Image (cartoon, rainbow, N blue to C red; front, top):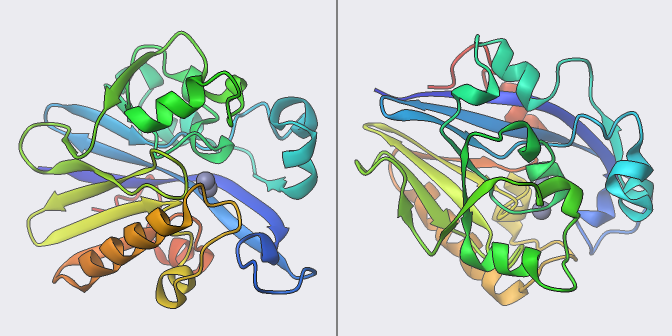
Length: 252
Ligand SMILES: [Zn+2]
Ligand SMILES: [Zn+2]
């Protein structure tokens, strides 16, 4: 039997035009940052690790001046993946797998807190991260961790219940997580789709790595949503997030 928990990792405030490039700048937008815990009989998996715990005290030092000037962290005490796991009586060493959707700072900022986990990341994402001119902040992901390259779809526990689903385009090797628990199914889209509005209007952010590929991933996600019983959980949708049960209450 599966259990799934939604873990609150704070919020980011920024200009709405970063998410909706056709709009004029000047309107603030607040986006929740999330992590998820999947409890499977064969082990526990964390999907995304949120923003670094060190970032609120020193945003420019930890995230870099450019990112810190665009995004303001709005996280309260206990809104980080390690504190959220503690509300369930768990420590990072209890986690067998961490899957990162991608290596943007709000999805892998606490990777270093899980030195005993095996990290499941798409090969294309690791290749871009390890490239000489990396697009990513090494402080987030480049630690002595066991990164296992995943190439395409991957059945984490071998029984079809927890599937890594490639959704490239936002970044080179973005992946989502498909949780299949009988009647109830979730796809944790992460940044393959920021909000419901992005899905319904096919809005792409200006920072897409490959816009054509991202459109294909959105079309695939839309197809899954139309299937009976598949709920799409968007990466940064405040209205949807606020309506979900959060840890310590289970989502599933
Ligand atoms: Zn992203
Ligand atoms: Zn994000």
